[in-house]
Image (cartoon, rainbow, N blue to C red; front, side, top):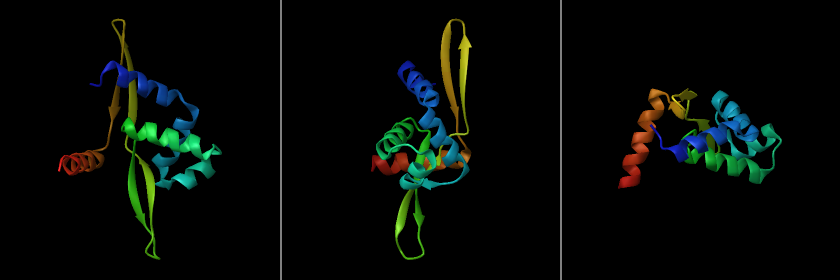
Length: 115
């Protein structure tokens, strides 16, 4: 379970229209920052600020998309399947469901960050 500050940050993120729009798009397909700017009709700073927030909360992750000409692009993917909000005994809690494949990626990143 996350702490109260994380719960509040998650609730704020899913409440934000731009963040929800970004999550909707990256849950369908991996997209680059410029592609998300185009699809959301939001300003570039707004999209990148939301991406940073969503990545910090563990709701999106980055991947590298290889290109045929040898260039690579950073793309964003949803790192979450569901966010659950529970009201019980005067308290609010938030839980996040992630896919099993993403758990392996997160573990690999953790190990790499430690070394």
